[in-house]
Image (cartoon, rainbow, N blue to C red; front, side, top):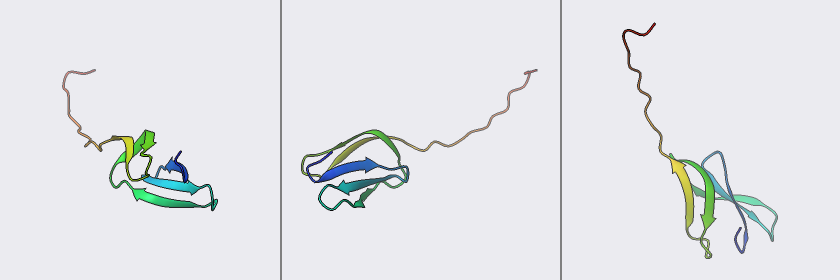
Length: 68
């Protein structure tokens, strides 16, 4: 929550702001390739965000012999 509204971390990797005064939602940041998740913290001036993310990992498939 900030002085000008409620910040929301979306599943689309964006940070949206719900304005208390206007009652509307707008995207204020696109996080790109990050799979962002909670926690989310916004600086008092609304210029910086701190959030958790998990980098995308490659999937590897290996074979193991001798398994029944």
